[in-house]
Amino acid sequence: MFPRNNEQRRELDIPLVQPSDPDVVPAEPQREALESQASCWYTITFGWMNRLIAEGYRREVARARGQASDLPAALTEKDLYELRDDDRPDVVMRAANELWAAEDLLPAEQRSLQRALRRAFGGTYFAAACFKFIYDSLQMVGPYVLKELLGYLHQCKVDNITSGGGCDQNVGFAWVGVLLVSNILQTIVLHQYFHRCFRSGMRL
Figure: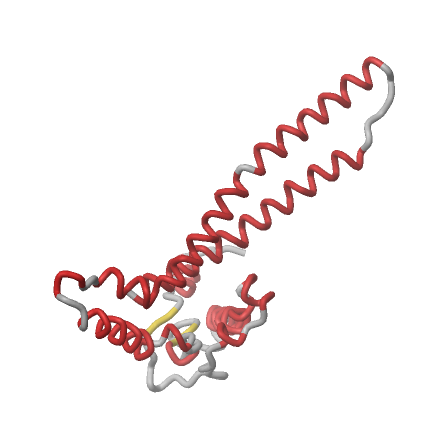
């Protein structure tokens, strides 16, 4: 499973993405903006990246086995997807210039670069803030559910000792299910939060 010697370790020690080599032609170049075309499920799970990850893994396995020595890296620039339309440099620059031009019409003391940037890129950042609020709120669910679950187990023990009766297992399974769903939602929301933060930083 792991590299057994330095030679094998060097074979796997390569960057994920390198500048394109003109002599290397990718097997299936992908230039679509798949993120903007993805369904709701693929957006939540980042499934629109599956083909890219699978292709990189296939090439790396082939390279490690000596079947693709001409490939300098698992992926090159030619394999990467196009950016979303609203993340493209020309679109970002045009939006910023238009809103700054509107600010430029105001008196000098009323102009605000912060306001122009907020109007141009604040929507994505505000969405990230909403995801962060949801994530922080869900973090309060875990300790509460765990407290209720421990209380349920303690009560079951007491009832078993005092009356010899059992507990309703459906209640315990319900609390465990709530805890599981809460953790899954936290993971999904946190990923969406970071993704939008990175997009905001890329635009600025």
